[in-house]
Structure formats: structure tokens, C-alpha cells
Image (cartoon, rainbow, N blue to C red):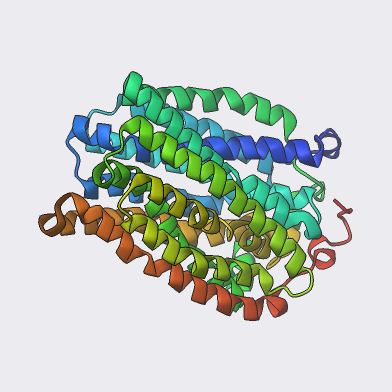
Length: 432
């Protein structure tokens, strides 16, 4: 994957077109990642898996290499071509998603999900850096929020498409269809997206990995943002994975009804919350950098009791109303925090910094949250039976309050840790 030449960068599409293609890839990222949640019950029935095993498939199997390989792949992207790394990653994770259709036991599916994680490891952090190349600081949180719409849009598409295909055909076909669709997207992405304005030789300009890691380690805001995001992600990924099962077990919804329920709260609440976070951070953060962390903190405090009321409600209709607002508030953090992380390092190090942030966030949040809720549900089943998952999810809501505290503390350190764009860009880069 050679570095982009100056001529290739001049042929790059407009920032909006680049953002649209990055969003499309991120949608597939979350379709392939979250489709397992809506397929959990038919997979468990077919393969005889427990909640704890499903928690491993949805969490650790995916997160282990997804989190750790993201760092070297982001370092490679900073030193070569970010768009090429994203393209290769899309091809890899789509292929392994299709391979999930061939699984005939726990370990077959486990290894296929590991492959999905390996592929997705190279997609997100380089995308953050490409966005930072194409959008100026005062619009970056909104651009990252638009990109992060891939989470609710992809998750909604995954549960809707997966639920429909599984109900009318078979769960294996759901994996095959979405995997092949991702493979078809990769050539189009490569045609549209080129790396943004960087020095002609990124390798010569990019700092060594140890320098980037050392610079971040000395900044308290990096640790507070990372562990705050990780705490919220433990519950966020846990709810995303286990809510379909809760709706079917405790509320008696069918597979199709569950798909529509989840899809609607993700599309309505999730997209609104994501965009709200980006707009508020850009507006408030221009006056005080701390708001890039304080906006998410407030969202977690407001959303936690509403989530508890929804989980503990007695009817699916009431639960839908109660889940709608906190589902949006749970996504508010992405635009502000991701933008703040981009400003903790110079421009040439942004993909590596994002990968180190994602290493902490995903290894703890994705790797631990889904499994923890599944294992707790399994442990509580002898006492609470079919309601065990409800009590497991209620217990996990304390993680959102922990995230709020860490984000509030991070806001105090952001002004001193911030790297402005005129410093981050350097003399060889022009204005985006």
C-alpha cells in the first residue's frame, strides 16, 4: 500500500463525498458487527449455545484482535495510505462475515467472528484521521458525528435485515447476504476516497509509535476520556447485543417485532443523539474545550434512569417510549470525544492516537460488556429464570454513572492538553 502521490490527492472527491463513503463503510461495519445480536436466539437454538457462550461470540471473540490489531494497522495507515488500509479492512471483515454462514458449532463461529474483528481493526481509526484531514476544527465534531451515524444506522440495518432473513429463510443466509454486500462496496469506496492533504511522504513525517504513545500517556484527559468511553461502551454494547433477547424473553415479542422495535429506536433516537452531540460540542466547545467531555457526562446522567425505567417496564409499548430518549443520549458522546482525541496529538499521528483510544475503549467495553451481562444472566437464571437478563442489565447501568464521572473530570484537563490545528497541521499542510 504505497503512500498517496500529490496527483492522487488532487483527484480526491469533495469532503462531503468522502464523508458519505466513509459513512457507508461504517454502516457495513456495524451491520456485520451487530447482526449477531438479532440472530442470537435462532443460533442458540440451532447450535445449543448458552448466554455465556453467546456473550463470548459477541464480545471477546470479536474484540480481542479488533482492539489490539487496530494499533499497528493505524500506525501503518499513518505511514502509508489510510484509504488503502480501510479498503483492505472492508474486504477482510466482509469475507469473514460471509464465512459465519458456514459455522456448525461454537468454535467454528468463534473463529469466524475473530476474523471479522481482524478485518474491522483497520477501518475506524484511519477513518477518523481521514475526516480530520478533510474538515476544519470548527466543523470536525459534527463531521465525526455524521460518520458515527454508522453505528445506529448499521445496527438498525443489521437487526432489520438479519431478523427478516432469519425469520423467512435461515440465520445462515443473513450472514451470507450482508458479507457479500460489503465485498461489493469495497471497489466503489476505493474509487471515491483518497487520502487528504498530508506531506507527500507520510513515512518521513510521521512520528514513531513510542513518541505518540508517550505523548498521550502524559495527558490526563486521554486516560479519563478512554476509560469513560470504555465504561459507557460496556453498557452500550451490552444493551445493543442483549436487548433483542430481553424483548423476546421478557416482553414476548417475535423475531420480526423485535427487529422493528430495535430498528426504530436506533434510527429515531440514535441518529438524533449522535447529531446532537456533534452540534453541541462544536458550539459549546469553541468557547470552552471542556464541553467536549461535559456534554457526554450530562447525557449519561440524564439517560441512566430512563434506561432503568425501560428495562423494568411491564409493556413493550411503554418500553419503546422509555428507551427512545436514552438510546439517543447513549450516542451523544461519540462526536465530542472522538473530536477531542483528534486534538490531543499533531495531525500526522491522528490515526495512531485514535487506535490507542479505541484499544482501551473496545477491549474493555466491547470485550467485557457483552460477556459480563451474558455471564451474569447465566448466573442469575437459577433464581430469576427468564427474567435473569432483565436484572443483569439493570445492574450494569451503574457503568453509565461511572462514565459520567470520568468524563466530567476529563473536561477539566482538556484545555491544557489540547493541540490546536495550526500546530497540528504544520507548515506543509494547507487549510482543509
